[in-house]
Length: 506
Image (cartoon, rainbow, N blue to C red; front, side, top):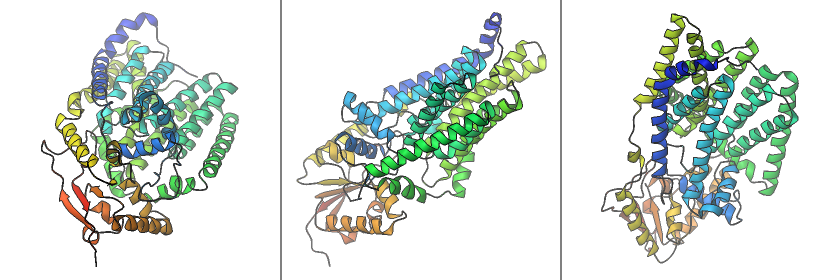
């Protein structure tokens, strides 16, 4: 493995080169930690699907199936199970709450930052470059809509993909059976966290081919494929044949859109364009033979296409950009490390290029300023939720929040199916399942199974094939005396209170 050669006597000069970027990066890292500190223990949702994730995790905790027949009480999500399993372990430490889930994400996000440092330092030989990489990655926090600490799978997934890159670098340095097995296990864990890992695997295999040769990549492909197949068979068997439908058939109904590709381009252009540009230069500047350079191209292409296609899917959010941010940060930082070493070797043109590269990254890191406390939940939102929970607790009977079932659970009423999962199923690839869900919903709603239904908007009822005029419920707007509740990351507040009135409809 070719590495940069960095004379130790030049340490002070190197520190001066990196000083502005390190300062901006340290500030970005501090802001990220401060924002996380003010909301990791928040009782309510930061993002509108956190409650659905809590429902899934609590099913693991209480020995209930994750995948099965859909009803209005529970519709399985279209995700792989690893995040739920790890979050269930976290529940044993932090209790049955969103904090337990967010601690998995926070731990994974910090782990990804450490892996950025470890990879950059391993390749460049410079701890300063590694620290600059940490700051650059922390600066992408607002570009993900402040997603690092959200109770969703993406931080864990990004951390596992980063760990796979690190394991590949270790394997190419010193091939051994232990390091080979570590790489396979990490890649399998990434797949168990998110299905999209399969799209990344050909690019990882191509990079591995460039760095280690045909023998290693063939063994890796065969072993990973066999292990993934065994995992899928076990999950299918453990779920009575239900897993494949939810994780693959239902997930596969999300199509890409031209607007999604346009959205991805704008995301990059207005946030991390300099970082991606410098990342694309690293394979040209990297030491070593053309095959080593091609390995870096394969990684960058894989992470770029992975995030681009994920962002192009209907309904995708900024969280899917996290893998690209990771890869772009490590390569951009390595580009700066190469340019600095060449500048220190003594040529004004090289010094100008190094100054330009570091200046661009420093500007990009500093220009997206945000106030960490502005990402904290407001007191008015907390009070609004408390008043709503008091009202829910006073209801005599079941309560269904179609988009925030955890609120009914907090009030002692139990969960019902999340609207996103309902929509995924009714628009999915199995009309018979969709019809059974609609029939179950119609029977429950028309007979007053739920004393109260709480909607964010009427569309959540429409997705079940019902209108407000079709059901025996009295509709009332929910008032928040302190102002409407807000979601620090993304989401809509509950707005419609439907009370069962027992009326006979025509």
